[in-house]
Amino acid sequence: EIVLTQSPDFQSVTPKEKVTITCRASQSIGSSLHWYQQKPDQSPKLLIKYASQSFSGVPSRFSGSGSGTDFTLTINSLEAEDAATYYCHQSSSLPFTFGPGTKVDIK
Amino acid sequence: EVQLVESGGGLVQPGGSLRLSCAASGFTFSSYSMNWVRQAPGKGLEWVSYISSSSSTIYYADSVKGRFTISRDNAKNSLYLQMNSLRDEDTAVYYCARERNSGSYDRWGQGTLVTVSS
Image (cartoon, rainbow over all chains, first blue to last red; front, top):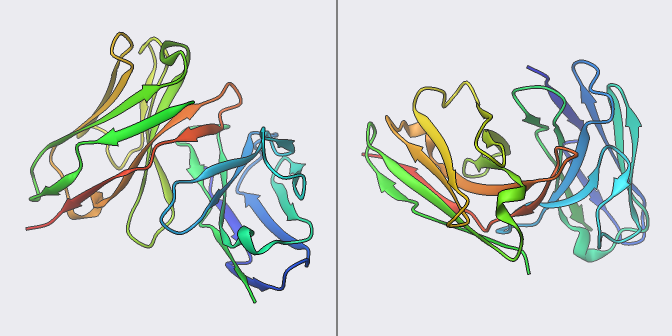
């Protein structure tokens, strides 16, 4: 099973600040890494697919990078509405797995 | 508008059974693979099961293999999850999710809560 680890677990950020979340896979997964945003009491929403491809309708301040085992989700100029938990997800091999999540809080 | 609406959750005793449904609308359901993903209270996301568009390929997480059965009815635009021999640790919100060719899940339902407790 491919284990995804995320860091940090929690981040408290002021608006307009830049946020960087990393996701590391226990083995190479190419670019089969996706990012989701989940706000409290809501279902997850797709932000980034294939490591760096923005999903339709997602604000341009969200971007992804990486390949192999190391991936990054960047939120440029954080807005208050970005308070959420962010998950990475690999679809390279079974069982498909998710990272433990990174909670982003607004100061 | 793409919509996925889960139903069928509820309170069930350990060892009991439940059948979840996911009604799809706003897109050609028969063209997409589908998944079930669950989230225990206050916890992260866990992939549960996958079914291809034609039902020819099915996968399960080890934690549910042999107890859960995924199926779909393309004529009814519906996805199902039959859950048997339920355990306390199956307590979670269950989401159905549409899969893109990339393997990402681009649409999720609102979820249905399954509580396994005596």
